[in-house]
Length: 315
Image 1: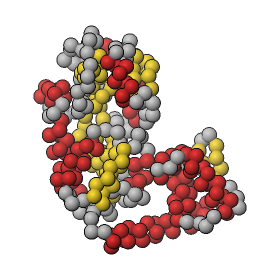
Image 2: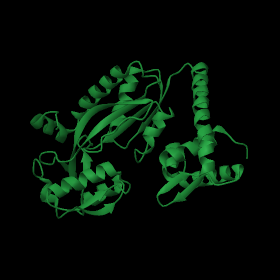
Image 3: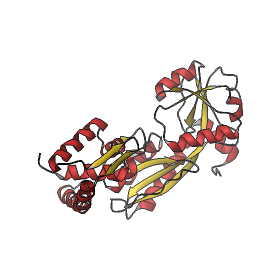
Image 4: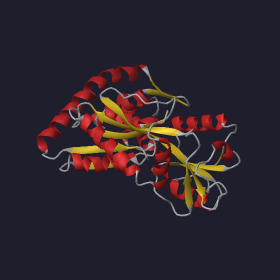
């Protein structure tokens, strides 16, 4: 096997994330493919480069030696590739990595108005773990992210973040649920309900949800770890309840209701590379996305009514 720069990127990603699985997500690979790649690299160098355990992966002395050299080589190759792309294309390519929220839609609409000639490519990640690393390595130019109280995000080196809006989370109920007729629902009144949540849920939203439920005097019964489509079916049948963005579109046989005093909320965050196409017009981009967000929010009737009662500011 001939050593290539992609092999050095694999080593750096494993060292930076401390985990083969997280490194695989950062580089858009499967965990088995990443592990197989590492084994081939280790055979090339004649020894283990990482000690693997349940706690993650840590470099061996040989791995430390190779990483020290890789960290100087990889940025040089990255800069060479960026310069080559700038010289060989007349079209601005904007790669957007997206958390699974509706902010991706608003960013796409804003970009179409702001840079109509650009080649815009969106890719949704099921979790956000990979996005900061993709921004830092300039494998994407923009990222839509979200964070939660007590778990606020900080940008990696080479990237910048801006908060677009803070949005409450609403509860989704079957249309004939006893609480569906209320204007707002107390979280405590959902203590006896079964809940549906995504099977893969990051620590920020998970801990925020549990803390809010504890403050309301109960521990939630997380009965269903399922994707959105399955959750919608279960909720519409009255078998459970679930959390939704306030801006979520209307769903058949599912009613969205605000939670009293907005105990659950999150922030929409936009990230960009500081050396990318928006380095000089970040303020214009953020302003455009904010305007699109609020214009689109008015299309969600329940959220629009909530905003009229409470205003935009959420503490």
